[in-house]
Image 1: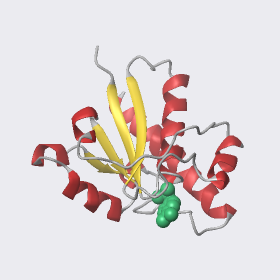
Image 2 (image 1 turned 180 degrees about the vertical axis):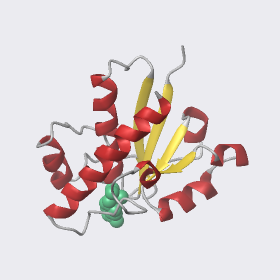
Image 3 (image 1 turned 180 degrees about the horizontal axis):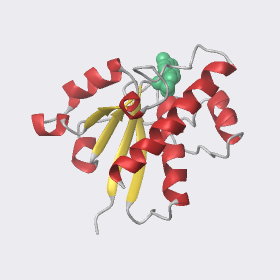
Image 4 (image 1 turned 135 degrees about the horizontal axis):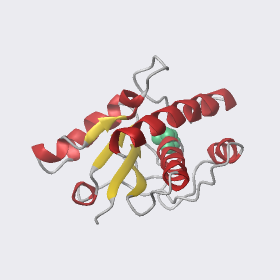
Length: 155
Ligand code: 4NP
């Protein structure tokens, strides 16, 4: 059986989307569903290509048990051929992905991460890059809830 493939997208691919990928992968592993689901992440800005996630995000995530080892890469229109679901962290990511999608049909694969939030009243996942430690903790809180609900929606 073909795996269902989820691609998480943010701007730099060093804070939000690799954290979302790590959290989603940990849910998939805990559910024993690694044979059915696969995740990856990428960024709209290529300036951090090849880098590990931001040290502050790796450390905040590690404190919650997530080891982030993804290496940043830019998203490409070819990704729409490989992935079933493409999840944008904010409205700017969403708009950029809508332009990148090779077909109208592919635009239907694009979702906003915040659309999976149920208890937090916020319409996007904020960029923590210029925030303090609190920003990283908030982003992880949002991503944990969104990933849990996203997983339920596709499982
Ligand atoms: P991310 O955060 O999109 O969550 O990875 C950012 C990291 C770096 C930059 C922007 C956002 N940057 O412009 O370098």
